[in-house]
Image (cartoon, rainbow, N blue to C red; front, side, top):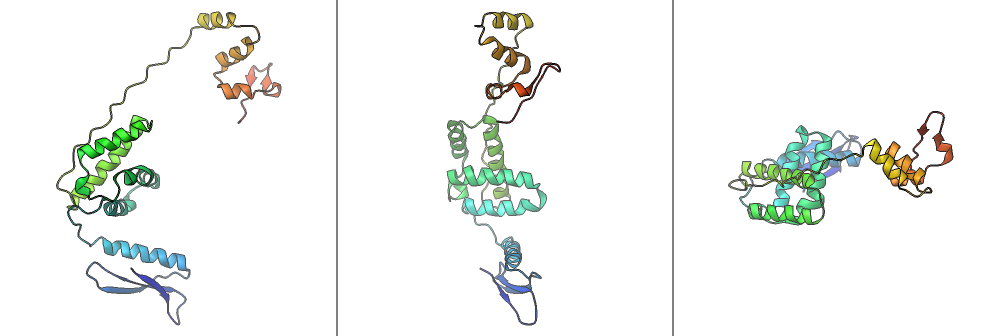
Length: 218
């Protein structure tokens, strides 16, 4: 674990850390504030950790940290935020701090079933499976596993297409309604407004001359 400290006759913090071979390094952080100096130290320690060989069957959590550190300079911030959310909220808690060699096709399939039971959309589960596959590909690259297990995507069933009513069907539907409900469903049919939007319509929102209805946030 490295440290930061002050030196006389300089306004900057200095940092001290050890590399993968145990050699000690000292350097000026070129930062006057402690937070910036700590960020400098974390970067240097991360660079030093890249030289540490990965042991076969290393803990999955350690490899997650290493993988995200490797892809960070080459990935868009939005992508990093997305996979970070997948990992922190779902992947890491499910697999825990287990050896990466214990992450098999069966266990990944169990993860997918678990997420589907939580009523997560198959498209989202498939994105999380892609994240797991890329993580395991990195594990294979650094020698933590022998090969990436086969991960099957979830079959996405297409939703049935919408069948819109014809003008004649809309007229027949409105004619069959009680008079007090007819204005409500007429506005719904010809504007596409949602229920809560309709409930919040006031006369001030209606312009009969321009045939417009202003939808307000609720």
